[in-house]
Length: 182
Image (cartoon, rainbow, N blue to C red; front, side, top):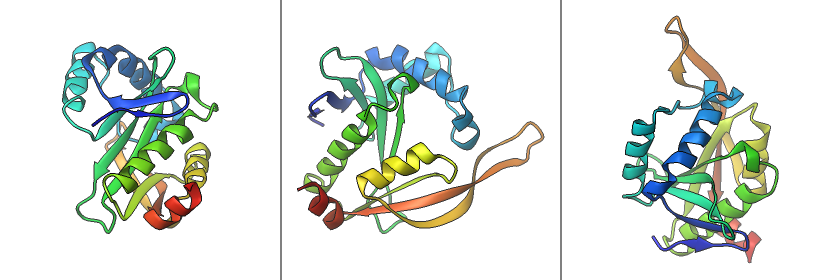
């Protein structure tokens, strides 16, 4: 995919050189309160390098970098959805050092615009833990509407019991997004 550019960011495919910045992000994420409620990432240099080499082959995960410096600050995932009425599922993870500056909103808006205008998607879904206020606020700023909730588990505790949490499901329809952004 051609890189997407905003006022402050470049959103592009991963390249092998992103591995150390992704590893830093993953290590911080795995040590955070969010990790108990999400997929855990491997953290070894070799595992992250292998992941980045796979990510670089597709448009499903996009690196977000600062336009001026090229600094990697996070990523956006855009997974295709075959078992849903929506064509894509939006996900994101940004380096904690860059939270609260509007980068996630700016990057996600640009990706959503691309998906709706260039890929002609009808709707996009997203999900987050009910307690994750930052993620819920981001999805609201982007125009997503909550459409459901369910108990979710991505992994188990030390005793083999599922770590469950309440997850919220969101949908953003093309017409709603395009009316709001134009």
